[in-house]
Image 1 (cartoon, rainbow, N blue to C red):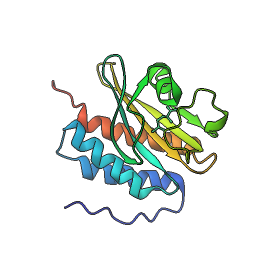
Image 2 (cartoon, rainbow, N blue to C red):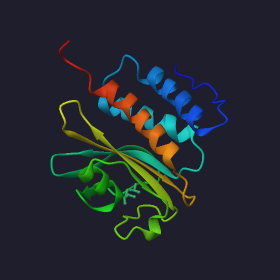
Image 3 (tube, protein in one colour):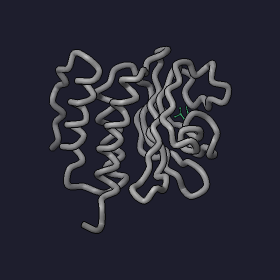
Length: 167
Ligand code: SME
């Protein structure tokens, strides 16, 4: 059984470093996409304060489809370019939105969401796997440190599910 050690960090960058270490341990030895996505979402959900949703949308070749997550039931399909998730997927750039109410095309799945961060997930072959989406009930919950920390966490996830098949 995996038991997440209590996180003792007193600043964000330490917190994300500890969390990345835990994610490496949690996902180690497993490459199944759904299994690792589900455990990754649970790990982050329990470790980070002030979240009301965190989870995956996977690209099915035409649009984004919801994957493993924590939080309330969510929108199932998001078109490329639509909402914060679709923008992150299309631009392949992490999106940090300090106030979702000021983001014209925000797709409200949970009215509690006030801010969010979405990280695109790109495979080694350059193709799009999907996005990692984290929502908060707190305005301006995510900053540059969260961006760096979430991107590092997503790298741990991608390393687990998108392993090199040739040496
Ligand atoms: N907020 C997202 C939609 C997905 S849910 O929040 C789970 C967006 O606008 O892309």
